[in-house]
Length: 359
Image (tube, rainbow, N blue to C red; front, side, top):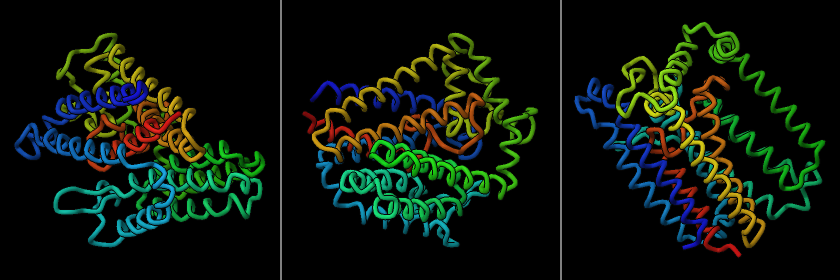
């Protein structure tokens, strides 16, 4: 096993262990209140962790070159799942958003599969069509059309956060792939207009933005207020494991979107610094794997998967600090959720396979 693989596994393993600890800490009261078992969510998270770890091992042993040949099925499956979510009786609604496909055993979040599938497709496309990217119609337009369909379906759920993440990833990857700057400026302009229309078209998004800019600690900004209280209470070393008061029905989504705030309260600045260190270690190692990849597809794939995971970590972290409006994105490996955890671990497995074949 190479040094890079050991570092990636170490960082991910640390995140998983901390995630299990924090899911139990942050959810035990609510789990007992709703299900009569304080370990209800912990038990499910353990099952997700084991399942995701098996997926990671399988992807680790699966030659990453084959993913470039499976891009069409991956995109079609993503489109089918996103469309299936919108079918009445199939899609599962939570707090006004229909983002899950309900099954007898778990709820599948289609957007998690969509993000990784589209990234794999885009990396394969850019590796094959690198010279054609200078021509907008022949090189850049095809993936943008697919992106438009995916984002259109995501916005119907609605899932604004995942749409923004996919859009940002696309701009970064096509820039690295060699697209013209004027095309990227045009793409950024169109994306910005789309974001403005999306925010203005839904009253609650406009309310979130207004609350983010001028928050009063009530309504939508109540969640942010409780998150900042958690950070403030944590101080330098925290109040101690299990001693968070914000998780006691004060902080909504304490074990999903705002689990980092509970971590900050219990372990303080030192604990948050540990999370940032693990993020940086994972990111820098992923970049090293990318630079050493044996071909262009491997280089783009390793970079994209690393950036996708770290970008979601960063967005989630910044949301809990009030640096970004609430997006509804979880912290990979740390937050409760089966779809996010399993897909993220599968992405790590692909990254490890690229490392296995590096120069």
